[in-house]
Image (cartoon, rainbow, N blue to C red):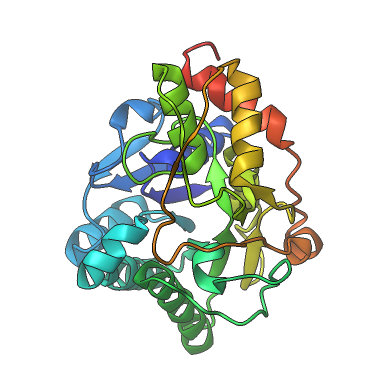
Length: 304
């Protein structure tokens, strides 16, 4: 298969590229390297350095590679940036997605779009199914939801089969522990340096933590399947305090957490209902949290 991966030098994208190359697919990565790292890419994958906001550059990449599928993972994914710079967030996540959709339309290529679960559903009283009310609390969730709606519009207008995947809280090797990142990467980054981990609020807020390897499996499973919107999670809640305890166990660190004031707008409960993806994509997250954390810690410490 000929595939384009936007954001393919990033955290999740580079794992997708590895999986595609491993099965013999022809892969072109489109990444502006603002957060990605070309060193993550296998030599079999080609790289075009381009910003998805640059429509002609995106079009040129598609014209050269002529993909059958585009895994669209390039995004502005920092919630705080989306609050401070909502126009920039929309330029990347909405206008950039439109550029990808237009380029894909001209090549008759399917788009598999990386969306978000927690940021779209808002507070969850129970595991959120795909039909649950969408109540974003930040522009990031709104821009991802707008991207989903553009996919659905193109499907209706052009008869395409684009699919959106609402990821849970993804963690795993290669996630950046600096700045705005997943809490697992932040915890392990601090523990590796011997610094006390910080917990915002009381630590009882819950998330659906899903391992990057499982996310890759779901992402590839969506290629060639009928259009849809699917949650990619475990259906299990883990509190921040429970996660920290598991990280301490894996790392062997003996550090007490520092409790900071809660962050404005932070969700207290976020968990996804994963059944639809299992029924229609044949995907089920299989990596237990302890195993995924062990693999992540090994990568952080260079012992993988």
